[in-house]
Image 1 (cartoon, rainbow, N blue to C red):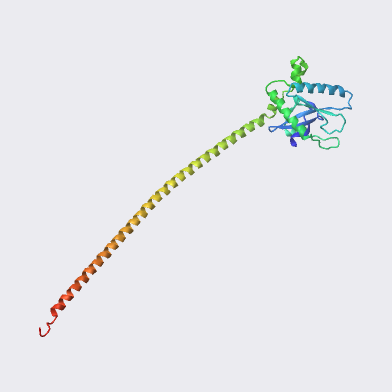
Image 2: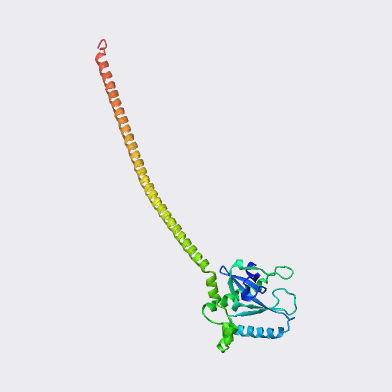
Length: 269
């Protein structure tokens, strides 16, 4: 992964321009962890190895660790080769000051994922302790014992980070403020939109309720009118029938009386 690629430091005055570093990304910042090599072909290999073993033992007892002792994480293929990760001199760095680490044949070398993850976790723990103004690992132990030489071992990496990322942190702060303001505006617009929608829904609901009542009243009036009209038609029909019946009765009663008046008396009676 990109987070665990060893690089060569271009800031030669810090550790020399041939020392490999492991680049670890922490919260968007690049940190270079220097690797110290223990080569069995060197005459003082055993002396240095024993010294680093002692450091590692004291680090383990006084965690968080200030260093780590690894095997051949750079794939030198040298039997017995060891690498030491020195967290106590890790430095913050911008990407433009680093380049990929390559071997003598020009092959790009990247550490194993498990090694990179371990370094990242150990570096995080170490920096958290440094932010509290404390010494840790073999350094803290030896300073407490009165060994003054180790007081200058850790570099003030927090001050370096602050200086290196000063403008960057300002920009991030401005960007964060703008983002928060934009989010507030968005939330305010959404809140106003929801209020308008609620108002429209209430208005439409009231209108729908009023229309329903009006429709009910209109339907009721229509029914009443229809019933009244039917009653009037029925009454008129009854009156007309009664008038016709009265007329017929009168007509029938007039005919019999007239025929009796005109009837002749039989002869001989």
